Structures are given as structure tokens and as C-alpha cells.
Length: 337
Image (tube, rainbow, N blue to C red; front, side, top):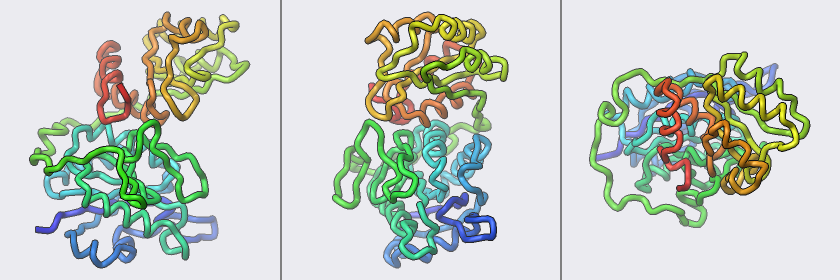
């Protein structure tokens, strides 16, 4: 029996066409079938869903919820899911879906393109093919298929604006590199036993609390930038620190501002500004001074994973210790323990 695959279109460059105001997403999911080899369209029973048509720079947490619900409501009906998505926020969406749909035992693959699919020389057709190749591999969960690679969704980041190899797998190998037939993880030898959507994801509405801020520490940062986060109603803050995880030691007002946020109950997550390798604020005195605000280390998570995981955890509970516990767990392979 053929595996049933659902293509969910959400817009993005892959679906774009020219307008008098520049590129805008117009293509529906049906258009993407023309770019797939006959063998692939023949191997699978493919259905289509046009969820929305947006430039991914406009995709927000409410759209993550829509995508998660579209998958959950159809999870028992299909064997795999392909979401076509713009590249600008694809890593955020892939990370958010990794937590919202944690434990998924079917492939949920996001892909897109740096050029519209109907433009000669576009990477769109190749990326669609890579996405469908993933359905043969046995890998499950949320993934990104791009430039011949299959990347765990919560380990992905977009690092290039024009090049076709826009995404990289951060701090872990890609799941699969189809160009070399190499993979960093061994997929299960047997397909996982069927589990229903209700058992995996429950029936309660998906929740994301988007009241999370992101600040990159920089030389000379005014303390008011930190205190304004509480004034704006944020419940969580991801702070990108210098190097391995250091905070300015000679600026007491900046540390006082951070203590003020902690005293007001804000959950503070720290990570390095460096893309690669984990953060550790215990190495230098410049990092250890943070212990008073009880920050949670993002370790080797991407910024996208840290942000969306904190939003997800805040959506789960209002209890600070439960939030800390949730964030510290390795939920979807986003962290190396």
C-alpha cells in the first residue's frame, strides 16, 4: 500500500511570482507536484492543503499553532507531511513545531527555496525532491530538507541569504546528506508502532506564549533596554552573551537591571552569541556573576530553538520551577546533554 503524504503550502519564495511590488507568494500546493519525478509521485498517495500564503517574514506564533493543528488533525490519516515554507523564518517554525509536536513518529518535513520554483535554475525543485526522499529514510519528527541535506528542525539555522546551502545543522551532523548518502544518525530499522494523535499530542488547544524577548549583549548596552522588557509585559528573556557565556562585569547598573527582571519573576535564558559550540557561564568570573538571577543555560541550542522552546514552556505552565524543568529537558533533540 502506498504511503499517504500531505503537502501543506504556506507561501514563501518557493511559491512566489513577480508583481509590481516585488515577489509575492501565489502558487498553491498543486503547483509543486509538477516538479517531482514521476517515480516519487507514483510511489506515494499525495494530498494537498493550502493553509495560507505568506512571506515567511510575516509568520508569527499564531501561524505555528495553525500548522501544528493542521498536522495533528490529520496525523492519523497520513504517513508523512511536507510543509512548503519561506526560508526567512523556517528555522523558527521548524523549532516551534518540534516542541508542539514532540514525540511525532512520522516525518514532518519543511522545505522551501532561495528562488521561486518556476524560475530557471531555482533550487525549489531539488529541495522538493530532497523532502520526498526523506520519506524513504525512516527518520521521523520535524525536519528541514534543503540543499540535499535533511536537518533536525530544532537544530537548524539559516546562515546565508543567497546561497542554495542556506541552512546548516548546528552542533550536530545532518540527519542525512543525500549528495554523499551519509547520515549522522541511524534511523530505526523498523517503522515505529502506530500511535494516535490523541495519545501523542493530547486534545487540548496548542498554546504558545509569545511574551519572550531576545537581546544580544553588546558593549555599552544601556540598562534601560533590559528593564524595558518587564515594562512591556514580557515573561521570558533570551540573552545572548559574549563568548562562552560572559556578561559585562564593570557595569553594575546592567547587572542591577537583570536582577530587577529576575525579582519580577521573569524567566531568563542565557546562550552564547556564537553559532557553534555550547555556552557555559561558569568558566569565567564574568559569567559566574549571573548565578544570582538563576538563569537557565541554553547550552548548545540555536537561538531559534531557545526562543521557541521558552515560548512553548511558558504556554504549558505559569509555574517558574515547572518552566525551568521543561526548558532543561531534551524534548526533541535540540540540546546535547
